[in-house]
Length: 85
Image: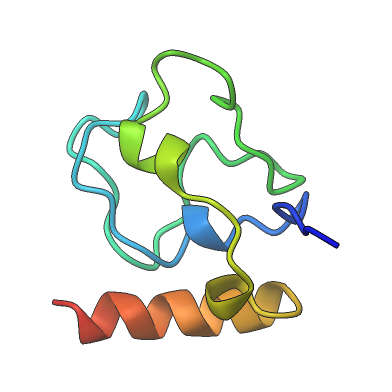
């Protein structure tokens, strides 16, 4: 069975840095900072919008990164961000 992105997770919109401009964050987003486009339900307001950064469009759910739950995804993505500086 193929899994998809967990609605309401938002770990990929918090843990990693994003160097490209995001509407509302013209300088990008530092690691560990919640994206301004992440709503109160942890859903991207720009999903399907052409102004969504390309890096965000290309990020896909992967069990080895996203794990079994949101906290696991946050831990792994934070570690990857720190390990790849």
